[in-house]
Amino acid sequence: MPAKSAGGRIPRVQENAPTGLDSELVASIRQGDSPAETALYEKYSSRVYFLALSELHCREDAEDIRAETFLRVLQALRQDQLRSPDSLGSFIVGTALNVIREQVRQKYKTQSLDFTEANLTGESSLESAFIDSEASQAIEEAARRLKPREREFLRMHYYEELPKEEIARALGVKEERLRLIKSRALKSFREIYKKLTKG
Image (cartoon, rainbow, N blue to C red; front, side, top):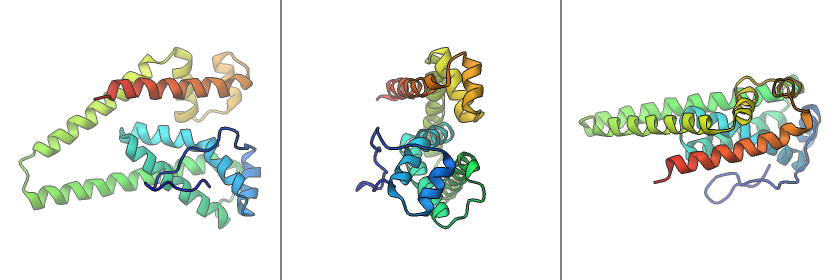
């Protein structure tokens, strides 16, 4: 697992980190193999981040969700709590969704407490709702501005979680090209989203 930075975020891993089958990664992580932990993070990092960003509409929150998700996943794998290594992807997504729900509940409780104690007029709540609405619109707009193939790939890969062969067949490309399409799609999405939310 990559070391955390001073701010608590997990830094980007090296581009040439090894990758492998989920069953192999799980077996290696159970044996305390650090490169396998790095490979796991590289393989699923973007999926967790994109999911968290889509749900929370905040880049900082998405980073926090990603960090907490992988901490929990690695702890579970080290303690041999995953029954089927082949379900690793679903396990990671499920863990991320649990972390997201916990954060939403905690934020709701905090906001409710602040509202009661400060006897607010409602202006802060309205402002927060407006910001959330803007972020949501920015995500939807960023997705709309992607090339059709990139948009379809992200939908099938992150939301429908289709196997590579099905995605390749639906897009009419070879499986080897999916990695390139994924890289370009995520890069385009980030760039468009940053432009839309700048300022």
